[in-house]
Length: 65
Ligand SMILES: [Zn+2]
Figure 1 (cartoon, rainbow, N blue to C red):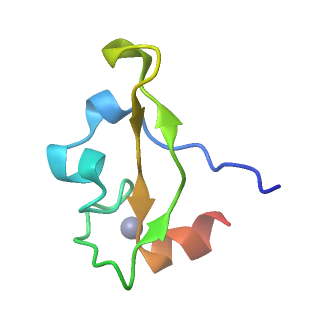
Figure 2: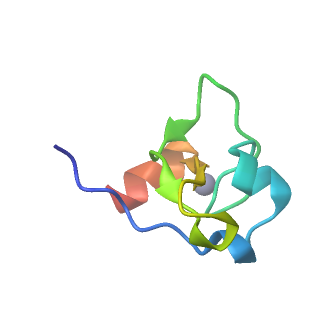
């Protein structure tokens, strides 16, 4: 089991970052090849079962791993 990296508050992120289209930390556009999936995170403001799927670029992943 891996430890989930802490991610920014989704309320402070752009729509593209919330969708996983851009890195959650540096807002760099992501492709399915370069994106690192950070795993589903709860989004309690939108309901008890709502999740969002943050993704990041390889650079940020390396810096935070
Ligand atoms: Zn990044």
